[in-house]
Image 1: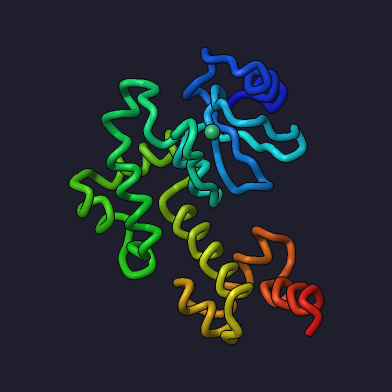
Image 2: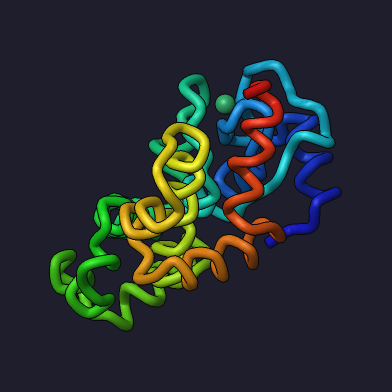
Length: 191
Ligand SMILES: [Zn+2]
């Protein structure tokens, strides 16, 4: 992955030679773009860079409807593997690794577990297990802010095996316990 300044200079110039080399995530809108996107350019403090479209999606971003970073034909190697990676991401999002394991997931995709691991390393920048973890935390975060369910209900509904595990993973990723998200929200909403 290129360094931040190189990516930032390239995206401010809309440099087409970097199209497909990196993707721009916009923290304020939750959308990711290609360097050539014609939309208004976000402030530097609001952007993050990703090596691939799946990597941006794992980070919780949605593809921009103007530059379509999820469909553009970048490199030939990507076209062949794209459907496998996207399908794996969809299955993981739906809970394939909450109920089953990586070998079973690979079988459903018609590839070997080692090939699946390689594709994830190359295109997602995380293992399938780490990816499943990310999706679990995203699910939990939505439930924390959108529902009044208990911590135990949220942990299990999000795909965690225990509340303890849920707390540990959440704390590691956000640096604070899940209960703090809800408390902040209550204070903000004034009840
Ligand atoms: Zn865009």
